[in-house]
Length: 255
Ligand SMILES: NC(=O)c1ccc[n+]([C@@H]2O[C@H](COP(=O)([O-])OP(=O)(O)OC[C@H]3O[C@@H](n4cnc5c(N)ncnc54)[C@H](OP(=O)(O)O)[C@@H]3O)[C@@H](O)[C@H]2O)c1
Image (tube, rainbow, N blue to C red):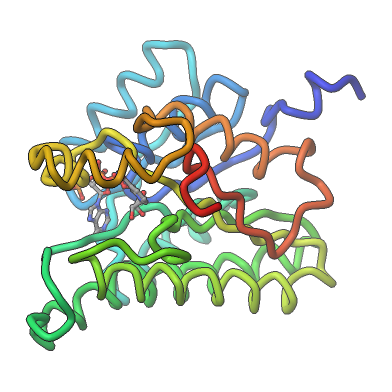
C-alpha cells in the first residue's frame, strides 16, 4: 500500500456529529474527498439536507442523519435506524459540542453545567458505547473525539466547557484501553482557536482574541480545514498505530 493509499478512506462509512458547519463540516468534506461515505448530522434537518446535497454535488457520498447529541433517546433511535438499514459505521467522530456561557465557574448555573456535560460528554459516551460495541464485534473501527486545547490549558471564562473537554480526553483513553483489544482505535483531536460560529465571540473581542493568539507560537488562529486533515490522519490507515492519543492541533499553544 502506498503512502497516499494509507490516507484513503475509500470503502469506509463515517458518522460525524455536528457536521453541517465549522470543524465538523470541514471533516465531512475532507472524509468525502478521501472516499468515505459520510453520515451528516446536526440538530437541524434542513442544514443536514443542504450539507448532504453539497457533498453529493462535489462528487462525494453522503446521507442524512439528524441528531441532537444531548438526547439519549435521539441517540438510541439513530443507532436503531443504522441497524435497521444495515449500515455499519467504521468511523465515529464525536464533534458536536456546546458552550452556552462565558464566565467563571462561580457564575455557572447548574442548568448550564448539566447542558454542557450532556452534549459534550454524555452524548459522546453514549454514541461511543453503542457504535464502539458494534465496531468491536466486527474487529475494526475508529473513534475520534474532538476536544480542545482548553482541556489541557483552561482558557479564561471557559471553565465548565474546559472541564467537559478534559473529561472527554479521559473518556478517550478509557475507551482506547477497553476497545483496543478488538482493534478499535480511539483518539482525541485537541483544537486550538479555529474560526467558526462557536468561536465568534472570542474573535469579536479584540483583547480576548489577541490574548489567545499571543499564546500561540505560530501567532495565528486556524481554519477548520486544518483540523480536518488531522482527523483524516487519525481516521485512516496512516494512523494505524495511534491509539488513546491526544493530537494537539493548536499552532503551539500548549507548549
Ligand atoms: N472553534 C474553535 O475555536 C474550537 C476550539 C477548540 C475545540 N473546538 C471544538 O470543535 C468542535 C466543533 O466546533 P465548531 O467551532 O466547529 O462549532 P460550530 O461552528 O458552532 O458548529 C457546531 C456544529 O455542531 C452542531 N451542533 C451544535 N449543537 C449540537 C447538538 N446538541 N447536537 C448535534 N449537533 C449540534 C451544529 O449544527 P446545529 O446547530 O444544526 O445543531 C454545527 O453543525 C466542538 O467540539 C468544539 O468544542 C472548537
